[in-house]
Image (cartoon, rainbow over all chains, first blue to last red; front, side, top):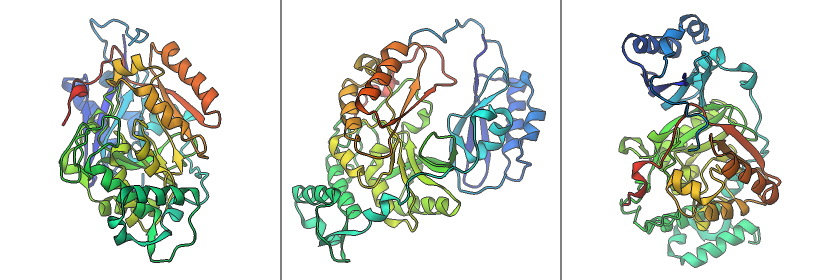
Length: 75
Length: 351
């Protein structure tokens, strides 16, 4: 099953941005971080156009293995 | 995008498999991303005026008693509460300009409450003034975990609203989406003057309101009240909290807060105990909500969690319509969470 993927964005007062991605490893994680860093850069384009262009499904969609569909299970 | 206000902190974004972005806290720096990838029809980004015409803070700063501020320290606590009640009722006569304000009264009462902290029902009774910490791990200073202009925060709060995320919380909800704000960090401790400076910068940058959230801001009431004494501007104050706090702590907020945004999380004590680790949730929170009956601007939030339709969502909806018919219900779905949740391991931690 496919679940939303989480990206934690840490913004510092000096404008520095750090990206932490959960459940991603290797190259997809690095690519996703790059895309977000570009989108959030204080001196970047900031229009969002770049993220539409640069964000590829393979950076953030991963099939979950061995996990039941838990969406409707009582907590 | 132009950087119109200071911002700092950790903010989360969820990317759905379909490539849509969902930001539980839609802060200014994330706007371009959510604008490009979010469901735009659901996310208005235009400026929205806060309906509060004159912030209560303006009146709270006016003198209400002839006792000068320095003299409040010499008065008995019971007498301070008496003056405080009368000031809220408007039954005090005219006061000299040098007299203490309602805000001064509140900060003095708040400081006394911190000597044996009973701000929330956990009643740790530690002296936060002396640097001791209880369940929330806070001393008297607030711990600012993040701040930014916020968008899409629901009715009455205005847009953009300046969000100040204050760390520390009496609950340990397993589904908390800002778990990083549960435990205050020393490096985040802010003086009242520093917080006031942030609030003023946000007002200069066009914030419609000052929005205290977290974590949970209830544990930082005294620090917030102190900071409000130092602000140059005034904006409507939005208090977005769990309202899991004592009667007296709630009294301290009345007469300063303009828009109440309490989170009503659970419809019954069994769910509250299982998911947040507290036994007396319903009694405390419902009592506090009922005491907001006469407040003009109340938005009750509830995050719908899968599997709790009948035990929580339906119960809350029914309770609100019967008991707080003038409050605006703001129900929304949780995002990015799945699976069983349990209270965090630190539920039973004390001291």
